[in-house]
Length: 329
Image (cartoon, rainbow, N blue to C red):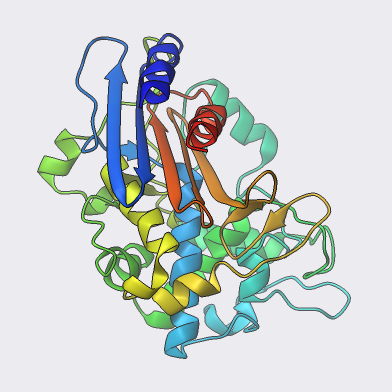
């Protein structure tokens, strides 16, 4: 595991802290290091940002398996009566469109300028956003393209709406629904939204940073939790791809396989929730970023290995994860 130690050594020179986890031959290994000498390990809790979207898509797939909805269900059918949902060329937005970023919706749920200013000031641009606000933004949105057309346009708004739709249809808040249907069955006891963390877990939450010595505000994302509100540990984030690599041994096997359906696109290859790289080996992956954290998780079905990287600073970790994966060849 010398490559992990080397990446930790290099990584903490430019970050407040870093945890790297590797799953190989069914065996997990986790190493962590903090720039200030503090302890970071597999139990340290980080915001994982948009990796949350893969959990949202698994929740979607579980609902398909249960018969609650289908991928082709128009999102309008799951939202509160009277909610305006934009369409284009007579095509309605479906649940699959939202999960694969092909709905045509804008990327953000807050105005770009306002959001950029808030982030530059170290503030959470979504702090005042409620679920009602989210649906209001949806109702006022104009689609950039016809839903389902090949071009992918990554949309936090779209996945936020997907989570709210499933929550409303089930009569259960998103965080509770996800915990019951996905997190508990997978044994992910330390993966939750901020409000669901107990006092002991909150004591293990690593403070986020915009830069060395520059703290970042937490982002609970209460108005659109499905797009990025989860916190997790490297230990849990290795159990997660372990289930992806061996769905037959998981209670969510059928749903997991459904999230691995391929979708071809000239710019990006995606499945429901996951992104895919084909060369030199097939890699399913996703990353995440909030105000003071960055994250990466990737797994390779043919090699049956996985890597997770978590950092409590807003400097990307994708290349760290890819280098570690390459070292496993």
